[in-house]
Length: 504
Image (tube, rainbow, N blue to C red; front, side, top):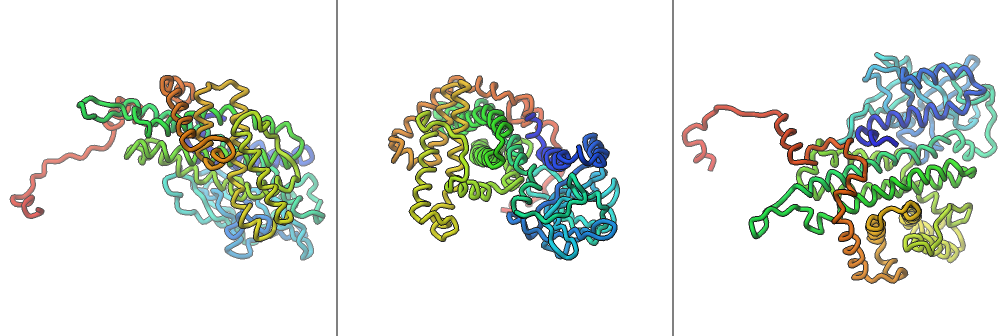
């Protein structure tokens, strides 16, 4: 994915919903629904923006239980929000930016008083100036420190829609699905691909943060005991966050196209979704560890929006819940893996410590589940196994990413730093099962970091992110130029006699 997406997350959010979800959902029906082509063509030209209204204020993780209704009438449907909790939350639906918007609204299809399951309905939202009749959008306050977007709460007051609004290959198919949950997952099939797509900009963001922090640390100095300027990169506490982020950026950037191909090649939709969840969980949690650590090591400069890190950290919090909350996705996947409903491709345990770690954790929890009679709805499962979900899913991702890096012959120092970063997440296992004592882990990390440092400037350039970086602290000259362009306040006021003494 183009690194430019990590520069403006609001833009990426619009594109992800517009292309990935809205156009993507409609595309499946175009052969049998040529009437949709005009709308799709408008959207492809960006004459109209598409939004995806699935979750509700009262139904986020349990979106299967939405309450919005689309009641069949003699001449179409009546789309209605029955109560405040059923309002759609939180895609940007206002006309604030002067462009028409159309939504795919998930609603319960009601026919003759009976619920026929959830379906999508094409619903005009606003033109360039105002909302369409019966559609109400409440603009939410901005999310703290993020790229601006008009996130909203959207509701419908008996909005009439034609029969052609139903998103289906056959607009006359009102049949109640035999398996309602499976049918619902089939309706939202693009979410699975979206789960894979949304973490892509965060790989570029990790690389950007590594580049900013690395360049800043090489020119930022403090005066030591001998009155000689010492670059702050000289200190191991500064070195680790930089080399950690650089290694994660290189390894995940190498892995992402590999796992995307795996997802596209598999014919089992369950495995496709599983790999998407593993990818999202692994990349997002890497992001959450790398970015704050580098930003903090940049001191006060790391807290300002113009230096990118503080803003991208806040933007990153949104992707954790976009296209499925990471933890919830991991819980569902982990439960299915433990019950052996299907298998995901994993490296041989003998390939690396990380592969052995992932395999061992999975087997450990399979044994634990068997010890409680395989009851995944029990209190014991909730207390003992469920909390392990995310850690094991991440471990599988670490093993897959490392395996791809090995096959691609990434530099050994980068591989070693990545390995040490993963070991940090579960040092007890690597001590108990991996044969690495605490001091051995520390020495292993010391050797890895020391091997990277001589070539750190080269590795930072190999991130291929420099041309997208706008943070002024990357160079001292860049900072001085930025400072010169800021508003300046001066004056000729003279303190009154005795003022200073009075204050004291």
